[in-house]
Length: 180
Ligand SMILES: Cc1cc2nc3c(=O)[nH]c(=O)nc-3n(C[C@H](O)[C@H](O)[C@H](O)COP(=O)(O)O)c2cc1C
Image (cartoon, rainbow, N blue to C red; front, top):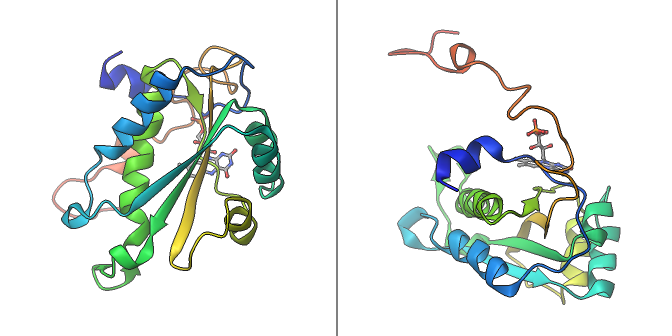
């Protein structure tokens, strides 16, 4: 699958088949995350791959709606290393989660290309996630919990046409000046 096809066909996936994800697919997805660009190439990301059922169950309990986390065969937790990125965006907002977000986008598109489904989950309790994964040090923050598996339905569990509900290009693009 080429990149544009992966972008167009990606749907958030919250229901998974029980069949295991082959290790080479998990590695391919993480290898795509690894290739993401980052500020000064600092690569301030860490990924914990969770396949142990009990640990997945506890991770699911750390989420507001944890069902996909409990049910997916693999769960990737993406962390940002805050101290690696002490800079701000334009002097007004801390930049440290940005690089990890780029890596997560790589990971999600690579998952699509590998025939896998995933969804970016942020409604978790940080301290619970830290504890479940073995006392994560200060300054290292979970940015996303990503259940990963073969989708229960084609195009993820959401169904429907691709990219429905998106604003039109006219609504989000201006030329030469901010003109909304
Ligand atoms: C930064 C970010 C955070 C998200 N957090 C959650 C989440 O906590 N739980 C969830 O089920 N989906 C989450 N999503 C998935 C979005 O809900 C989904 O991408 C959006 O509704 C578009 O869905 P659609 O592609 O079906 O139109 C998140 C997506 C992004 C990019």
